[in-house]
Structure formats: C-alpha cells, structure tokens
Image 1 (cartoon, chains in turn yellow, blue):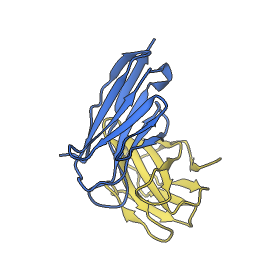
Image 2 (cartoon, rainbow over the protein chains, first blue to last red; image 1 turned 135 degrees about the horizontal axis):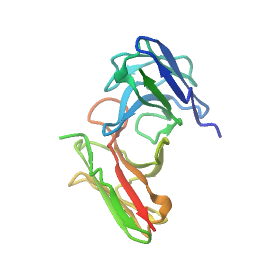
Image 3 (cartoon, rainbow over the protein chains, first blue to last red; image 1 turned 60 degrees about the vertical axis):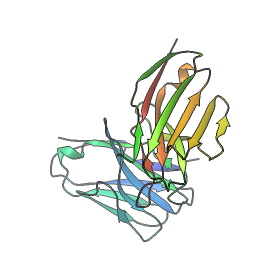
Image 4 (cartoon, rainbow over the protein chains, first blue to last red; image 1 turned 180 degrees about the vertical axis):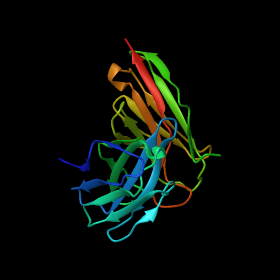
Length: 112
Length: 110
C-alpha cells in the first residue's frame, strides 16, 4: 500500500545549491505531477507527465526541470535554488489527467 | 474570473452541526469534479467525486449545478475529525491536469 512515495521529506538548501526531489508510484499510473503549495496560493502545477516519455510545463515551471525516468518515477530538479522556491512540494499520480489523483506526503523545502 | 473559487473561511461550527461549502468554476466545459480533503501539514486526499446527479457518501453530500457553474459539499452531523481544509477540484480551461481551488478551512469545535 505504498502509493506515492516522495523523498526527502524535509530539506534545507542554501541559495544557489541544487537538488533533486524524488517521486515513485506503485499503482501503474500513466500520469504524474509535481505541485507546489504556498500559504494563500493553493496548489500550483509545476510540471506534469501525461505518460512515460513525455513531460510538459504547468503553471509555474521556471527554475525547475523534471525527468520521467520510467513509468514509476518522476523527479523534480532545482538547478539553482532561490528563496522563492521555499515551499511544500507534492508529487501526485493518476490513471490519466481527469480522474482522481493520489498524492505523496510532500517535501518541505526551505531555501535560505 | 479565476478558474476555481472557494470561500477560504474559516468556517467554525459546533459538533453536530450541518455545514455547506460552495465552489464556483469558470470552465463551462468541465467534465470532472472532485472534493479533496487536506489535513494540516498533510497531503490532499480524495474525499469524493461529484456526479451530475449528485452523490452521497455517509454524512457527505456533493452536488453539481452546471447551469450556475458551482459545486457544493454538505457535511451533516459534523465531527471534530472533520476539521480540515476542503479543496474543490475541476477540469481546467486548458492543459491536462486538474485545477485545484485554494480550499475552505473548516474547524469543528466541541
């Protein structure tokens, strides 16, 4: 019953450092997503992957890159972290875009 | 008009009360609607889908009004454990992924 697994759960970065957030799902879902959630802003889509081998930008892609490594894994990379990227990051997966999503437990990232 | 709008609340209600949330959406072509629940510092979890005919799951009832472009969530006999943020979710105007509202905060008090 793992569902969607995100690592790490917490991270503190210094401005300019890079890191990769990992996400894996074991539900054989085709689509995967990365969201960020900030107070008062709700969930905002960063990138998504409709199916293995494809990725597309969401609402707030600047400063991020993604890789759909295989059907199970979808990683999010911050090349040069900025304080504005301090947020809670959620990975999600679904069978396809318009059905209910399953979320991971989130990564709390602080950039100082 | 924002794609999905919700009253942020908070809604403070006593245990046992009935409370209703509304959510309006801008895409008249939307086909999929959901309510998600998010506990403090946790991930969103699917509460229920919203069907055109309305649907009920225990104490929770969801309704869809396509003409006025809103969906509603009714919670009867509120429990302390219902305290959470409730997110309205609809198919987006464009793009692939679902659109999440900012959420309505509910606090059920003893």
